[in-house]
Image (tube, rainbow, N blue to C red; front, side, top):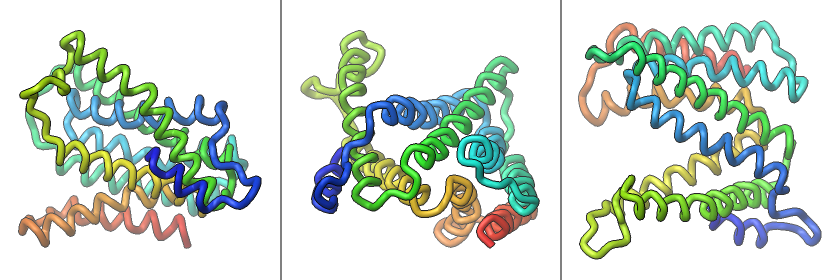
Length: 252
């Protein structure tokens, strides 16, 4: 994401801001990092179906934050869309529960982490809109690039410290087995996702982006059916239809 900075400078007009303000970085960066960390950690303690279901609350959380911080109206249509989104995620999530026994403490911790991820992701989207409104492309790229540089400056020392103390593998040692293609590929996907979210919020609103994000659920069902020949169940089909309907209600 730090590579967005040179492109931002190339697109910026004379006197136009490129780097994000320090105060904005201090607020947005922790939310951005917390959303990813909490989501991944939640999957270690709770079934994927439960985590997926809790993420169905994201549009409602974003709508509430947007009402408070951005003074965006919470219309009956948006309320219905939020209900449809949660119902759809619930239907798909329950069908993907997958069974297996987990301790109550682990389930509660996983649920709490999932909700923290939802709150952090919602706060990032609404905070981005609150700070920058409808910025030009150069400013969007500059903000994303600034966050990437800040994350790198803070994350690299932590990565070395974890390796040096034995908490994580010492990936810099000769002979260390590191799946670099997977690591680099994941970083590229994360960067594309971060840029897409930033541009989505800049061009529209956090609520539209929140509803658009969960469209990945029905999209995954279609891809699985085409690529792997899987047949979605009735609950998954109904849930996917509700999710699509929620997005249509939001943007109509």
